[in-house]
Amino acid sequence: MPFTPPLHHDRFDYSPITRRNLPDWPGGARLAVYIGFNLEHFAFGEGLGARLAPALPNQPDVLNYAWREYGNRVGAWRCLELFEQLQWPVGALINTSLYDHCPELVAACVQQGHELIGHGHTNAECQGHLPEAEERALLQHCRERMLRESGVAPAGWLSPWISESALTPDLLAETGYRYTLNWCHDDQPLPMRTRGGQPLWSVPYPQELNDIPAIVARQMDAPAFAQMIIDQFDEMLQQAQAQPLVMGIALHPYLVGQPYRLRHLRRALQHIAAHRSQLWLTTPGAIAAHVAR
Image 1: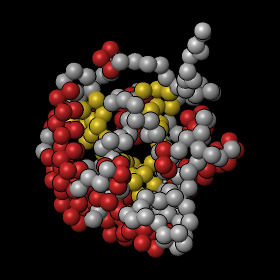
Image 2 (image 1 turned 60 degrees about the horizontal axis):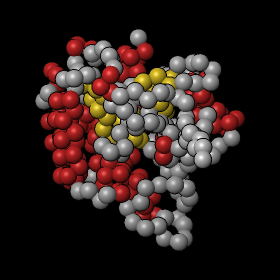
Image 3 (image 1 turned 135 degrees about the vertical axis):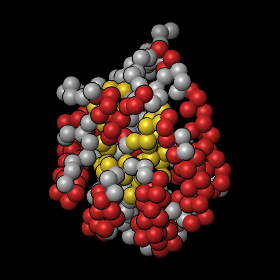
Image 4 (image 1 turned 45 degrees about the vertical axis):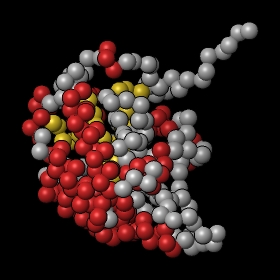
């Protein structure tokens, strides 16, 4: 009997990493390392959110809401101090509701020279179910609000909960975004096809080297997560002798900003920074701009 091919996204073709010819990163570096620093705001009494403990059947869920809010009030500020000490620019993934809730936090990211990246309006919601017009309006709103409040329109986007519709890459390109972090399928950036032919780059964003899957889902402790970062870096630095690679680290301050976890994160990031002369410590936007050139 005949078999029909499975559905395909048609955004890019299959390409083995061993058969590519990506140029070196600036300064002749072979490994680009970036931090995706997720700054998120959640609705009180409704919506989505990571959980420290099972949610009670009634709202408001004070325990889990307050645990997440610790990241904006304390954890993020401790992480920003660490990034500044290491002289490491990061990609700050911003919910635009932060401008209403804690504008000082976004302003601190701008003041320290970090890249602002679109990350929806709130992480209490996801976009994949939205009709095309509503999803386009969300993307436009976030871009325009960030431009108005911080003076720069974001070049990149990460959907809350990595939630996409079938049209998300098309809508991103059509509303002025130049790259997406939604796909975790490679260790190099690559161009995606869009219906209008506008360029849209996919920059690798980690779902393994990510504190939510590691700490919340797998219940990994702080020393193990830090060692995971170090092991990933050491191995990728060796692999990068063959071809230039991208290593991302995804962090959420309500997790890694807890003092006992921050101590181990500091150890891991100091290990990477000690190899600064061999690396490009950068941001996702700088990676996208480099390959687009």
